[in-house]
Amino acid sequence: MKKAQIRMFETIAVLFIFILLIGFGLVFYSRMHSQGMFDRREERYEKHAIEVAQAAVSLPELKCSSYNTVVSDCIDYLKAEAFIEAVSQNPGLKNEYYFDLFGYSRIEFREIFPGGSVFVIYDFVPEDIVSRSTFNTPMSLYYPSRRTYSLGMFTVEVYEI
Image (tube, rainbow, N blue to C red; front, top):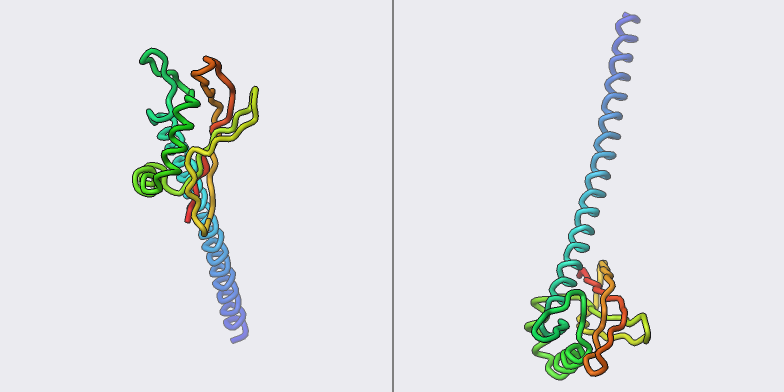
């Protein structure tokens, strides 16, 4: 009878260790799975920031053009100034049309050389921010009155609510 009890105890101990290993495996898998979901969500917002940047740069309201030829990676200073003024004077334009295009985001152009000015092109920041994704790209700013270019950084921050 003692040998049977010892074998039964060994079997129970092996089953307990087996179940413990399965439990550790499930915990490890669930943590890796949740980390993968977080990474995919973060990647999706980074992609969304790039899409918003592409939409903003491709706006005819901001693009540089010379003799009906569009210059790539360039913002026209006078057009940007008029755009900022029009959006600030007409909140319905910002809340309806441009919100559908840009959503909760902040789009700005920071002049690096030769000046240091900052132009906030679009700004719709929610009160409760869960996370943000930022996309920066170098771009030139064209001053049509002087026919000169300056170098700057085009920044898009997309907010998750």
